[in-house]
Image 1: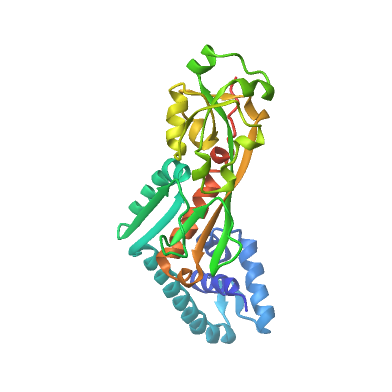
Image 2: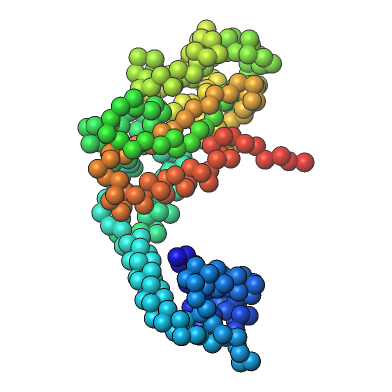
Amino acid sequence: MDWDNLRYFLELSRTRKLTAAARRLAVDHTTVARRVQALEKSLGVQLFSREASGYSLTEAGSTLLPQAEAMESAFSAIEQAREDQKENLSGHVRIGVTEGYGSVMLAPQLAEFTQRHPNLGIDLLAVPRMVHLSRREADIVITLERPERGPFIITRLTNYVLRLYASVDYLERHAPIRSRDDLREHGFVSYIDDLLYSKELLNLDEIGKPRRVALRSTSILAQQQATAAGAGIAILPAFSADPDPRLVCVLGDEVEFTRTFWMLMPIELKDIARMKATWNFLREMAGNSQAVLMGERVATE
């Protein structure tokens, strides 16, 4: 039996008119008639008789009515309990995430989440290193590499792009960059090779090692600041660099890197309400931020 059909039955029994029931259910009156007929067909009985004053319950309809009302009450109780659980989330959730994504994207998004759930505390570990679930450093981790094994729930959270950026001042003081070949003569800002925590950060290798790396840092945010101050060219996430008015994208989409964020949580935490709510929120925010993460530019006249 389809619960939705029972909803239509209940509204028609209360209003006795198709048009009134349709208004309360925000549908067309023909939908109400069709749904009630489907219910009658599934039960093999006639539930209403058509009279001048409207629709009246038959004996079979009167028998069904208290049962349908009991189902409606039970369903409403379940829905209310679910809403109460959402509103009353409490405790702490620790999220480990890459420095750039955590600082630029998640920090403001999680501010909204904590306002929605005032009894819930969030620890945001936005650090330039790997955060390990196996060491219980966090409850949920967003990372650049998908683990090959482990008792985890794993999902592909989102892709994002990185491009080349430099300051206007740097570009004015150095030779023009018209192609990838010109990059070799320029200074770069990049990571410290022997302190890299993920092979996904070896971006310079994909365009050929430049002759000079002017400044190195383990921090992507430090690299962005140094680049904006004119230290050289850097490969930066579009979600962080595009909004920075001090930076200019070099060679546009010609040099672009696509990377993936993976999200993990220990299996034993998956049914805890605060963990599930946080996990779903992070997925929702990543989905809503696709244009920013993929560096899509808004066309201007």
